[in-house]
Image 1 (spheres, rainbow, N blue to C red):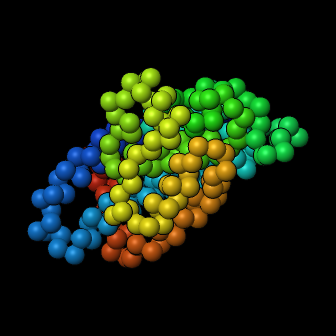
Image 2 (cartoon, rainbow, N blue to C red; image 1 turned 120 degrees about the vertical axis):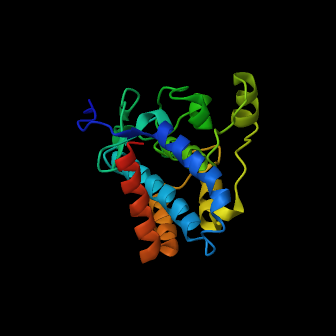
Length: 232
């Protein structure tokens, strides 16, 4: 059994994505007031920081031998402090290490979760493990980065053919940096031999550290405070 969210949610990821999308659109007009591009970097660091918090939450679950299986924006919220909360553990499963197969996978229920974020091996009802969550996270990270819905306009048959069978993945933007793009490519593969959630956390933490300075950190904090005061 898993405890639900005790703290009242202040915000949810779908709302946050909408706010970020509006900010990205407005950013076109901010070039004249942000000649050094600091606000643009801070906006990127803000999203990477949220992604890092989500990744850390999943890493913790995996360390506890729990696979989540339903990562999507609708299941991610934020408390009044801005801390990430993953909720709705209805599809989560505690794994028995003694039942792990030689290839590192488990015999688990297939076709579990939300199709848009579902790992191919889960959709095909093959054996899988914790890295199914890594795949789901990679699609979510793409969405948080590009601020578009992954596979928008795909019908179910189209999705099954192109994504599940033919391994079509969302296009990567070089502006995200070589490390983020390389990590996403590794997480996008169609089998469980993906990076662990710990590996993902390491890449995100390093990228945030590389981009951040005192001014960037102040801008990210300012954005968080203004959002809380505005009730977004």
